[in-house]
Image 1: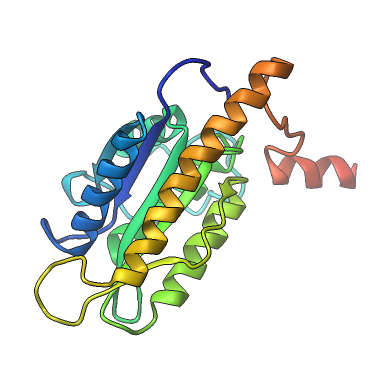
Image 2 (image 1 turned 30 degrees about the vertical axis):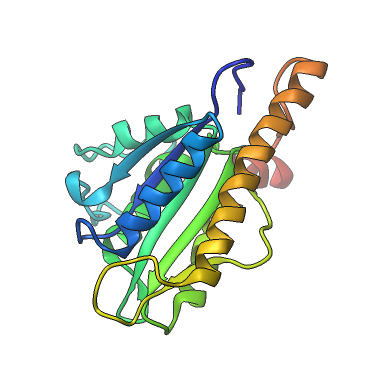
Amino acid sequence: MRVVHGAQPVILGISGSERPGGNTDLALDHTATLVEGRGGVFRRINLRDHRISPCSPCGDCNSRTSPCAVQDDMPAIVEQMKQADGIVYAVPVHGFGLAHLMQIFIERAGVGFLRFDRPLANKVGGIIVTGRRYSDGSVHHQLVDNLLLNRMILVGSGFPALLRNATGKPGLYDTEGLDALDRMVNRMIDMTLLLRSVSAEGGGDLLPLDDRNERVQRQRSAS
């Protein structure tokens, strides 16, 4: 991650909800207010508004050395992710699991674009999960694994930002979940500013990595 000293922190929210104005959208609206209140810039991608193809049967994802060739909106979305300081995945629980828009997205992003040099490494990551009451922890765990796979920095905030609503009417009624969301976002901003200050003192890239591509590392170890 190459930081830009003096610029406003940029947080990118990615919504995996099919429902405009639902709980997930409201949670990202709240996130935007928090980020902008701290002097940051909040950008947003609603996956429902983009053309994202599922992984195709080409079968060469584990061997190819160049980004996915399927023509859709993924390259532009990945580029926005690269430009952000922090990324918040926001998704509802569907069928006791990750909503399909987000599932398709993380599959394509991972095997098609991010695995080659892990461009999200050392960016700050956050997760919001909305649901009625069941399986939100499992969905959160899956996204944690995804952030860690991409070498991102997951800030602790006491409790995960799991926002529950069983009323049938969209709204941020879960005060405990909302408190966790507030703390998560503020700590993301704090971490972004801290990383920039440390990098400004030492110069150059912060926390440089020598294992951007785990496949290359395995090949080197075997040779």
